[in-house]
Image 1 (cartoon, rainbow, N blue to C red):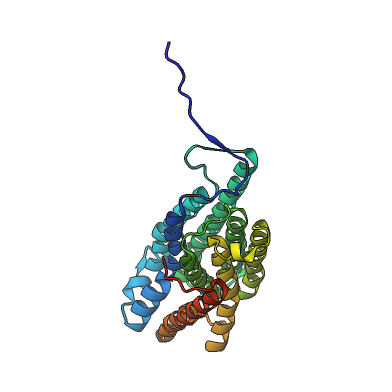
Image 2 (spheres, rainbow, N blue to C red):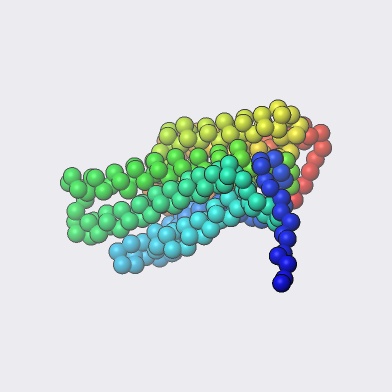
Length: 307
């Protein structure tokens, strides 16, 4: 009778264990921080500034190509990316078995990511409804106003609430001492702050996002405490660097945008001036990353290159 195979496994009783998937995490984070800027680059720069309006404004079955691309390409890939980030943070990895406490945290992370994607679906479905009524010359009335509220208010509140909660959750519960790619973490944190700053302004919710965004900084404080309040140690940590850069740059980005454009003007309404958002974003990242490198040099006592 064949003997049962014995599989060596390691019971994970906490998240205080470095994971080996840091390289993948960097690429996943880059997608999260960069991919949504297709709207600024393609719809804004190529579509409105250079005159290739068909890129984002072509109507397909009553809905713009931009919205179809967002729901059929960008959002499905984003869901996979968020799922992979959860797998990297919580595992299980090779020869690991997760205890119930870690499994619960992982399930909650999946729930937060799902609610964010769900809210994106609400936004898309109601956008189709609004487009259909506009084509019928219906742009007012109790039903239209209700649908518009669900589309532009409720869906955005759900999106931003669970988006910031999701990333705060990863910052708090990622395994400690993930030290690979420190400058990449700073760079993606700045990109993340810019992406959310422009995104919440486009979503007409900059003030609520400032409240939700404070969770990122709170999560960084909790992570610092988990590193035994050793700043030299936590400063090397990927999620701490990313979260701190993200949490600080987003409110600065919102304020800078307000000053630059004389208010919270939605990028989609700028028309031929949309190129200014591209210049604003490039300048913001250049200045922010230069300052971040200088601060890192001061704190760590040596200069590093992006890994």
